[in-house]
Image (cartoon, rainbow, N blue to C red):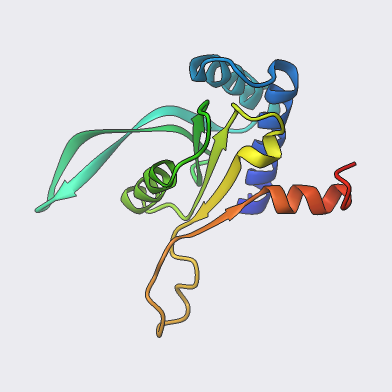
Length: 154
């Protein structure tokens, strides 16, 4: 399954959870409901995946845990915070680098409209251009969601 297909299904699952629950609950509540929704959607996933650090050839458990690894390709990090900070994006970038995965979704459920709480993070974006350093790319999914619903948001 392509990254785009997987991320679309993940976002649909998150939208369903947010529509049912709204903003203002604990992250653990959204996590439990999102886990249930991924199961219903038939997506293969792992939850709370240990992510070791390789240091001097040794695999060390440094305490990193990926919230969800979906279809063994997309990392999903859930939040229920006032606003997403650069630290949250850096967390997903770190997980992408350490795991060798390319695409991650950072989803903050504590927003009135979930489209404003989703960030797509891509590790190694533009790797094919050798002249540019490999830097992760971060984009807001909200512009994609808004453009598909029309300019007035309906």
